[in-house]
Amino acid sequence: MQTASPKTYYPIVILDKQKDSIVATGTVFMERKFIRNLGDCGHIEDIAVDKNVQGKGLGKRIIQALTGISDAAGAYKTILDCSEDNQPFYVKCGYKHAGVEMAKYNVPSSH
Image (cartoon, rainbow, N blue to C red; front, side):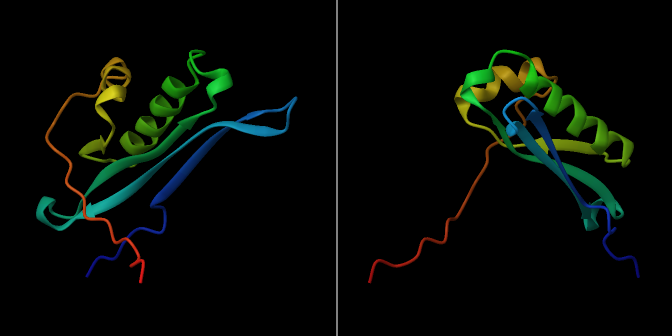
């Protein structure tokens, strides 16, 4: 029986050394897919770039680095979910529309 790899979660941050603060971040995690002969699928999540530094290519660098990590790990694909407003950015990064995301949120009761 194969188990999950210990190397499944890869966060990246870009720091502004002068301000000692994080200005961009993102994560890729690897999921082993049973229906793909236990092949790995990379999931990019939590991409964020400080509004004060947007437009300087940091988001693209984060996506390139995370995609590179996923590729190096042998993923058969790398996926991400985004809002419609952000689709043009991800298309510029080499991603394409591939379906519809569905979600069920577990919101605490107000009672």
